[in-house]
Length: 620
Image (cartoon, rainbow, N blue to C red):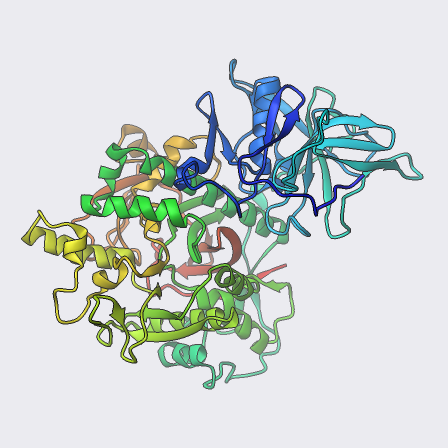
C-alpha cells in the first residue's frame, strides 16, 4: 500500500494529480524549480481569492486550499503542521461564521471519516514540522489521502489520491491508521462536525495556574563551576565571575515552571515567529508601511533582495514575553543580534549542575544542538568570520557561537572590531591573514551599520548604497563589510524588519485576535490611554527610552538612553508578573525559525535592562 520512493521526483509546481473536488495537487520538490517562476520569496506564497493558503506547495497549503475549495472554510494559520491537531474551529469565509472543529485520536473508538485532516506529530521524516493530509476515502482495511510535500511523483492515470495507509482495529474495536514508518507518529485526525462524540477533550492551559516558583538548592557542590580552559566560559568569567545572577537572593535559588506551561510557551513562540514572518512579507509589499521603519530609502532594495533570497537562513532570535496568570504576551522580537544566548544554552545548565539541582530539566538544554543544526544547513566555504565589538558580553556570546559553528564543521575566526580587515586589489575584503571575508556572523545590530549610512547621507544624499560602501577609504568600516555584495551576513539584512518595533502595530493589525499579541499603534489612541500603555522607540536596546503609563497612576517607570530621537510606537500596558520583589520576563529563543529554549530576566524595576539578573530556569 505504500509508495515506492524511487519513482521520479517532479520539479516544484508540477501537477501531480487532481484531488476530489477538482483540487490540483502539486510537487513540493524544492531541489528542482524554475527560477523564472519562483523569482523571490513572495512568489512562493500562494493566495486564492486573496486568502493566504500557505507556502507552495507544502502540506498545510493543500489542506487549507482543499478545505476552502470544497467547503468554503479555512483554518487559522499555524506555525507547524502538528499544531492543526489542536485547532478548535474553522471559519466559513463567505458568512464569517465560526464552525467547531474536533480532534480524534488515532487508536480511538471513532473511525476516520472522509474530509478529516490526518495529522502527524514531529518526528521521523516529519522531524521538525509534523505533517497533514486530507482523508478522501475510508475502506475497511485502508484510508486514502491526498497530500503535498511527501512524494513528488505524478499519480497513475485515473488515481485520485496520493497514497493509502493501512487501517485496522484492535481488540477493543478501536481504529488505528498505520504510519508508513515506525519513526512516524500519527496523532489522529480533525474534522468539522456537530457530533463531538469520541473527540479529544483538550484542556487549554489554565492561565490562572501559571506560576513561577522559587526553589532553593539543597546541596551546592562546586564553587569553581566554569572552566578557564573553555574560551566562552573564560570570557564569561572575566565579566561575571563564577556566578549566574549577581543578586545575593539568587546565590542558591532558581525558578521553576510546570511542563504544561512550558509546552504552551513553545507553541506560542512558534506561532509568534510565524506571525512576524507574515508581517515582514506584508511590509515588503507596501512602500507606505516601509516609511514607518525609518530606514534609508537606498537600503530597501537590498532588504527586498535579502528577504527574497535568504528567508530561511536565520540562526537565532529572541522573543521577549510576559508569562503570567493573565496569559502569554509578546513584547517584541529581537530577530537580529539577540543577547543571553550563552546564558540560556550553557551557563544556567552548568550552574544547576554545580548547585546539585536534580529537579526537572534545564530550560535551555536544546539550544546548543539546535545552533549546530542551524549552522549545518548553511553551506559555508572558507571561514566564518565572527565580528564583535569591545563589549565583554559580546566576547563570550561570540565564543559560544563559535563553538556551535565549529561543531557543525565550519572553520571560524573571531575578530574584535574591523581594524584588521582591509581591501585587496580587486575591492574585496580580506582579514589580516589575507583570507577573504565571504561569510559573517556579527554581534553588532544592523542598525549600527545603518547609522554609518545615515551619517553619510546627511553629507551627500545623492549617493547610492554602492557608492557609500565602496572601497574609497583606507580600510573598511562595519557598513562596508555588512553591505559588501560579496559578503553574506548572519543574521540576514531582512531581520531589520521584525526587530524594528514599527512591526508591532502591523502584526497586531494583521492578527488582532491572536491571544499572544498586545494592541499596538503608531499614534497614542484614547483606547490605549484608558487601558494604560508603553511608549517605545522603534529602535532601541537594553530597555532604554521606555515609558510605562498607568491610566490611574500616571508614569510608573521611565528610562533614559540614546534612542530619544527615534520614532515611537505605543503598546498596551501588560505588566510583567512579580515574584517576591522581582519582575520576571521570559526570553524564548527561536533558532532556525523554531522554538529552542528559554531563560528568565528578573529585575526590581518593571523595565528589564542590561543589568537585570538571570536566574536559572527549570521545567518540572
